[in-house]
Length: 435
Image (cartoon, rainbow, N blue to C red; front, side, top):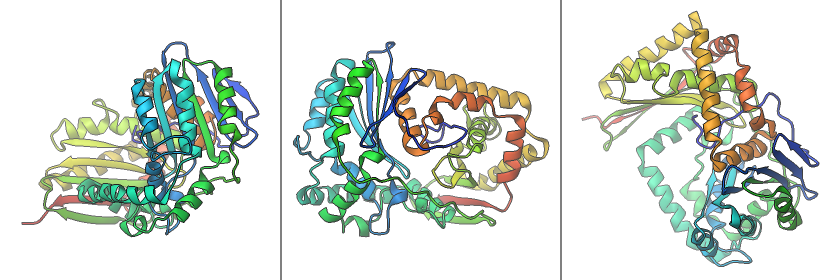
């Protein structure tokens, strides 16, 4: 699926308000201070994934804060009230585990993967990081050059420029138009006051989801979560609704030329419904039909025929207006031919519909691949964390395969006609510098 962290769906979105219940083999409890604990016992593995999710990302930043969610990800590895800088990473890795974090437009999460005997201290380390970071002025100044160098690498990467340009064209209202990493002029001005204000406004219990999946005892894990995350105080915060974009009624196109490029990189996309919309299930099935591996339509029609060297795409979900994207790499002189073939395929599907057999095969592939993916505790935990923090309903994950199964040919055909127009898409071409 296109979003590497998980793209899973549910019919209706409601705010999590669990008093303590078990759904299938998943235990969910919202603690008195607002923290949501999600625990899944698994005896088929010796591993444990421990993750702390927050409903905070670049889409919620104001103009002074651009890049601050990502900057805080760095800062939380720079020491805590209880540990020195580097100590947590050292202790986790010494036990054979791994620790990392990720920041996106809609969420931020911190995660540890480790053998089950070490789950307790790993949970406590994540507790230290995400509730009691140092956030000292000295560490802020230390981290700025590191993040700015990361920004330099981002700006030097032509493909990053392509996607930054695409987002600025595609989004006119919501903050998805801004890069997650932010801008030089904002990063350089980050100070302790701003960093602390942002942290203590967003990294609060009501916006925290602690997920533990693996070979653990639910009662022991819940007790530890209550004794750590459950004792944290903080003002209530709920991520605001992300404004939807007005329906796009025109073609938005830009061509970028870079001297280091030797081939053409092209992104074409249409507005798509938010992750909370029922049509997001349909979009996932359509993604599988178009770009789901070697048997997919675009692989067969574009890759196997030699028109492109690579083709990707699918439903890129957001809390707000999402995108259904196609991205291909080809020779410069083939760009127009590839575009023509792509639009021809879409037009034929819109006019004639997609055969029932192709739709059913796509649904089967999604469901089967999900079964295999769930063998990894990391994937299992990510799915639950994403559901809780972004979709704001655990059923987003739990009923995923059921809702994929419910997608019909009528749903697919209607989606194509509704969203894929000839004059309402965004296109960015990254081409070699003209001679």
